[in-house]
Image (cartoon, rainbow, N blue to C red; front, side):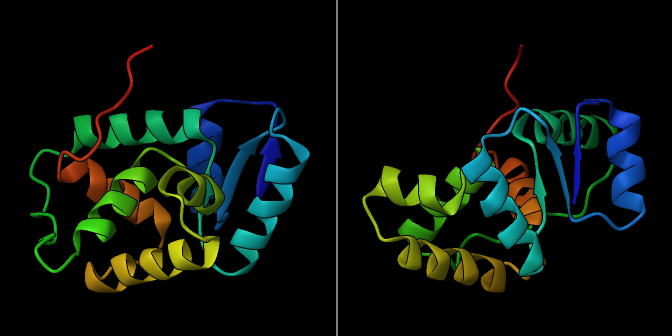
Length: 140
């Protein structure tokens, strides 16, 4: 994981190419940093929300002929809702609070979404949420 003050796209790309599973800015709250370390230690990927928005916008803008996104037909309504919230860069704890579920239940839904859509991690889930129009890039 990379923790930096430099919110520069070139550094993000270099870190991800070098194998980083996370890229966070130093303004992250201590509790969120601990959660991020645990998340990446489990093999998940995590990008700071501002970084993720830019990376996705660049990806969506430069992808000329993307492969069709996997079908959401196999997802339950709750799993689609969880995918949408993942696409908004919410953590499991934030999703649990928003949906009034336990964090363990949210983790089960996230696992089901990743499995059903054949996705490797949350970053790919965010891309899938954008591909399906469940979320849109925020404009500054």
